[in-house]
Amino acid sequence: MIAALALVVGIVAGLVLRPTVPTWLEPYLPIAVVAALDAVFGAVRARLDDVFDAKVFVVSFVSNVLVAALIVYLGDKLGVGSQLSTAVVVVLGIRIFGNAAAIRRRLFRA
Amino acid sequence: MPDKPEKPEKPDKADETGEPEDAGRAGEAGDPAGPGPEAASPHRRRHRRLIRVSAGAVTVLLTALLGFAIVVQVHQNSSSDNLNNLREEDLVGILDNENARAERLRQQIADLQQTLRRLQDSGDRAAAARQQAEQDVQSLGILLGTLPATGPGVVVTVSDPHGNLTPENLLDVVEELRGAGAEAIQFGSVRVSTDTAFTAPPGAGGGASATAGPGGGPGGGSVAVDGTTLVAPYRVVAIGDPKTLDTALNIPGGVAASVRNAGGDLTVTERNRVTISATRALPVPKYAVPTRH
Image (cartoon, rainbow over the protein chains, first blue to last red):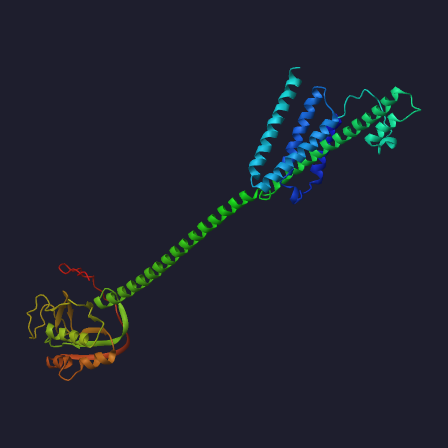
């Protein structure tokens, strides 16, 4: 699993380098991370179902991150920033839970 | 995550890196020298392979980036005081809370300062009152005779060799001293005060006549002062202005003259410092009570 290794490499790099987040990025980074996590869980589920396509994963990852950041930005501008951000996190959380449940079913029953 | 590694391909990136999708399709369509209908497959397969591999590479990159971003965000969240991450409306709410809190604390400071001032004032007043009370105790003690005293004054020696002096004569001496401003008087061993009584000693027949009665001694007469029997010569100590006391006793026709007329003698010695050590107990009034004012 090269991707799992890559995840570990990224974590180690983050612990070693300890960069500071630029100010313009700060409100979007947590949402982007959750959106990316959703894409990753979806990819793991697809892998277990043998329908994984790297192209689909890349596109969904990037689009998830961009859409989530866009929604947060729009919400801030409209004045409903905290509500929209909450909504995005809730929806992503629901999807993550759904994917995680499917993964669990695949791993422990099938 | 790379997909099933069934095809052990090593794609030749040098050829295919810059190849756009259209060029791939055009190549397979217009190639006359190619192997025919299967010519579509290798190009398309290579094209698909390129996409797969590059997608695989990007996947790896993206997962690494995700791990990196997770760690960075966790570190960011744990270290900062989280004010940077808040929205404007939240920050305004926090600012309002802090302002209200600062206002309450300022009010509290003002109240406490006022209380402090009040306590300091009352503390000062209490100290002044105590000081005044202590001074009063001193003055009253001296004047009433409950405290020993010292100061400039006179020592008066009254001799009565024939025992002719009456208690009234001796009382006159004390009264004259009082009138001249004596602040404390000691007659013999007794402190003289407001209600000191000069009486004939018990057993003596009162009156001016000579007998040295049972209380009389070799010096002459005797007298009872507040019940204490004293025998002549009497030593009277008075604290006050020495000159005034001396002059008062020696007024022509005054106390000194009366004593000498009765056969005794009176001498006054001015002193810079006399000590009165006799004291009396503080009398407690039985009938009089202070009026409210």
